[in-house]
Image 1 (cartoon, rainbow, N blue to C red):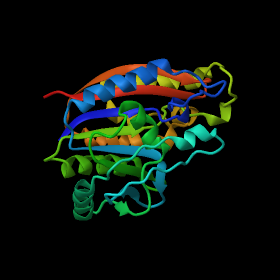
Image 2 (cartoon, rainbow, N blue to C red):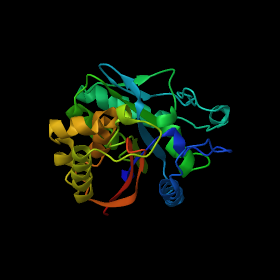
Image 3 (cartoon, rainbow, N blue to C red):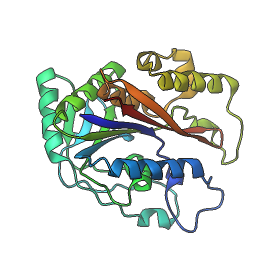
Amino acid sequence: MIVRGLFVPNTPTLLDVTPRPDGFPAHSLTISALASIGTNWRALDLDAIAVISPHFFSHDVIPFTGESAIPQIYDLDGFPDTFYAIRYPAIGAEDLARELQAQADDHRIPLQSVHGWGLDHGAWAPLSRMFATPPCPILAIGHGWKVTLDTHQTAGHLLAEAARHLRLGVIATGSLYHRLDRWTGHEQPVPKLADHAFHILLNLLLKGDFTAALQLDAHLTKELAPEGDLKTLAILIGALTNVTCEIHDWAEESEFGAVSLSTLEFIPKL
């Protein structure tokens, strides 16, 4: 069963490096929130954590890791050497992966176990701020470029079915507002229409109106350019199908007016 859900940012500027590069935002609220959430989650005695990264993708299928060996992938370019020295060893959730593949095959949903992938920074950047070492096996999930948002939501529901005998935490990573075309490295205001769209989407999520959130007007979605086209969030929402949640907004920071850092926890009501 799904014990907790989480939507968190994955920007590399969250990473714990010393000395911190000049110009990197502090993100103190987000880092503190991730640490507190990690402490709470470790006490839940989870059997596995599924982490959904927008940096793990395919064309026609939704990929996920199916092996016990789950290497750390440094999909970072142009950062100081200290970033590539961070080690985050993890064990793959092999049994959960097998059950998820069986569910996918039974329901003819394009979820596909793949080899040769692991934890990219979309997964290990927030995980490393939550836990010094993972408290349980990790299942890494990606998204499919040509796969519909509805199918990603169904994939999340099958993930919950695959974990029906487990205590599972589900983490989707990304940014609701992700306009890298506006990235300057200096603080600037978010455009009015994009800011309006962001608050509409955020408020829908906080109200638990997940259907409306995933059906946001196309013009507003274009202004936001959400990371992964909301597909990581759709998998998380699918995993919470038929579950009533309390939603906790832990932190709302941003990066140079170009990227949002929403940290939202979804706590099922028992």
